[in-house]
Length: 129
Image (cartoon, rainbow, N blue to C red):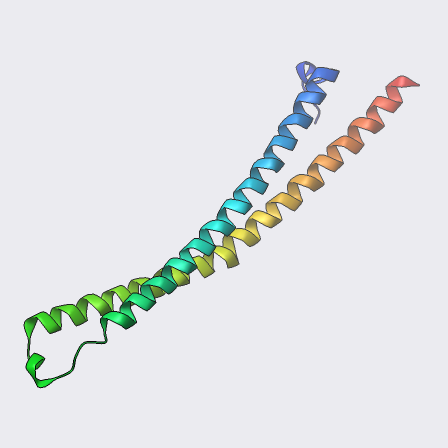
């Protein structure tokens, strides 16, 4: 299977190389952004956990025994703690899965680009003889 006649010129070759290079740059940018997002999410989760710890330091005196406000506050703090754990887990999953797949895709794109360049060079040398 070959290229159509519209893709056989030097300009088309350069356009394909430029497209491949642009895709590699985009994948690199995506990787940097995902790493930064994961880092921010982990920091946010840590901050939420600190807020939760501070919020749970409620005076445990007998004055608050059976208080609806105390129960509501505790429920809110528990939900906040749960949210922090979910955010951290999602950030770790992002690192483990998405970044790994992105790195694999980047390597594959580079391999295909190299293969294309080698094939183009081989074909071009046959026609220049």
